[in-house]
Amino acid sequence: MNTFITRILRSKTTPGLQQICYRFQSRVDVWMRFIWFSRALGRHMSVVRLWDRLLQVHGRTDPRLWAAAAAFHLDQGARAQARSALGQLSVERRALARAKRKVVRLRKVPSCSAESAALRLETKHLQSLRESLGRATRITWDRTLLRGLREARRLLTQGLAFNENSAFLLLELLKCEASAADFFRERVLLRRQQATAEHVVVPSSKRDRSVIRSEQTDRDDATAFAGCKSMALFSVPVEDQLSSSSLAILSLARPITLAFSKAKLWFFCCVWP
Image (cartoon, rainbow, N blue to C red):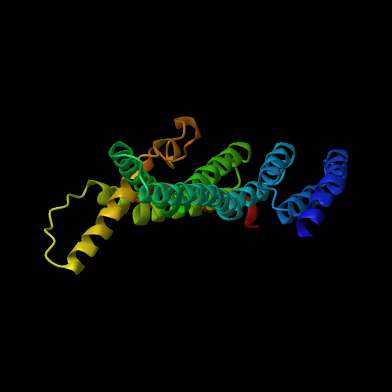
């Protein structure tokens, strides 16, 4: 019933809202209501396209829209992408479970020794696929958060290019850089250290074996996470970066001092009577 109602709303209400938005492009509240409506229907890509269009129309007049779009990509956009990725992984996991049950059923009554050996190899292959799916599930949230941080940083730097005297956008970008530095130090750097750590412990008991297995799982997750270089937070063009390099956000003293100096200068020149 809810799916039927959602389908009716998408087919009947959305075209009308689109016409209203393009008819009254100067009204920001109309755009925001359409964004809220699409978000309530769970149409993540429509919300992203509407934010892009809204920033094209009103990006030079209202700097707060850039911060709102960046906040969307950091919070709701990242959650929507993570739910979508986890849903796809869940479908693949169910298909893998069906294939594993079929192989187990065939192994009970093998027709020959060659088939038994092939089914045994297939079982090992399915086990490795299951481990890779579990690893992908565990690092999905970190990947989506990296993607959200990268998109938020791009929007804020682009907003600063259009609104050079906006101290609000400058402070929002500093907050984003601080969040990225904290995430990089607590998650990315830790996973990189785990990926490069060497395993030299000899198991002597059942507890040691379980600890070693857990550490090996963490190292495998870290290796898989470090392998997604295309989704790295700082793999953006040089002209789109505000800081000098990606590792510079770990020491934010100089950028923060410079930014607050600019903000203080702007405040005393333009705001203070």
